[in-house]
Length: 455
Ligand code: S3P
Image (cartoon, rainbow, N blue to C red; front, side, top):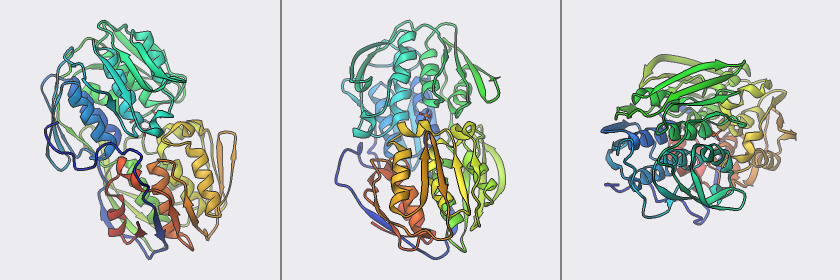
C-alpha cells in the first residue's frame, strides 16, 4: 500500500481500554456516520479483481477494512490513499493475482477473511489466512465446503476448520450451484467471487435473502448477474463466470449498522433529536428501522435519493416512547448486526420484545446472544434466552452497571455504552478498543451530540 494507514495496524490483543457512559441531557445535532463496512470491503476486493482503476470515496477507514486493503496490496493491487476516505485501487485483472509472500492477517474481520478466501479460490495462488483471537474462534467451514466443491485445496487448517488456514486456489474452478445451509452474505459472496473465474454459471440459492452488495457491485463492475425470487423470503443469484471486471467508481454511503447506535441513543435519551445524514437504505439492511417504527419510534425519512446504486436518506430521529413487539425470524438477515442495540432499545420499551431466530448471533465477533444476555443481566434488565430467541422485558427506568464484558466485539461495546446514556447509574464496558474495527469516530461523534462517555 502506498500510504500510511490512519488507524493502527490490525488490532491484536493490546491492553483493554475501559469506558463508562453516564446519564446525559438531550442528544442533538446532525452527523454522518462513516462509510458502510460491507460495501467498503467489497469495493476494495472488486478493485483488486478488475482491470484498470477503481476510485472509492467515503471508504470506511476502520481496522477491518484497512486489513482488507492490505490484503489487496499483498495480492498485487496498487492501493493508494488519496485523502480522507478517498482511495484508488489499480487492479490486477482476471488472472493476475500475485502470490502473497506473507500471511494475510484480517484482524477481527469475518467479512474480510471469508470474501478474500472466495477471491483466492478461483486463482492460481496459495495463501495463508489468519486473524485475531476472536476471528480464530469463528467457523470457516461454511465457506470452505462450497469452495472445496469449486476446486480449492485446503492445505492446512486449525481444528474444526478454523484459522489459521492455507488455501491453494484452482486455475480452473468449477462453476457450482449452491444452496447455503446458513443465511450468510459472506458465504454467498465467497462463492460468487470464486465463480468469477469459473466457466459457466455459478448459482447461489438462499432461503432467506441476505445483503446484496456483492450482486450489485458485480453488475456495476460489468459482470452478468441475475437475481430472481426463491420461495417466500429467498433469492436465486446467477453469475455468468469468465467475464473481465472493469474498474468503476464507488461512492460508499453511510453505514446503517453504525447509524443504529446514535439512532437508538436518540430514541432513549429524553428530549433528543438527531439527524443522521446519507444513511444507506438498502431493503436488506433496514430491518432495525422497520422494527423500531413498529415499536413506536419517531424516525422520519428525509430526502431519499439514489447514490452509487444504493438508496440513501437522511433520518430525523426523536426521543420516543417505545413498546415491545415480536420481531419475526425471517427479518433477522436484514438486521443481523443490530440485535445488540435493539436489545438496548427494548430495555426501555413498555412490555416484552421477543426477537426470534437468532442462532447466527452465536457466531459473530463474539457469541452475541450470550454477551447481550450477560450485559442485560449486569445492568438489571429482565430478559430470557429461550432456544434461539431473546426476550427482553422493558421498564421505564434501567439501572445500569458493569463492567460489561465486550469479548473483543465492537457492537457489544457500542450497544452498552448507548444504554448507559439513558440509564440511572451509567454503564461501564471493559474494552472500547475494538470499536476502531468499524466505527473509529464513535466516541467523538457521540460526544459531539452531547453524550457523556469517559474512557
Ligand atoms: C456481512 C455479512 C453478515 C454481517 C457482517 C457483514 C457482509 O455476516 O454480520 O457484519 O458484509 O457480508 P454473515 O454473512 O455471516 O451473516
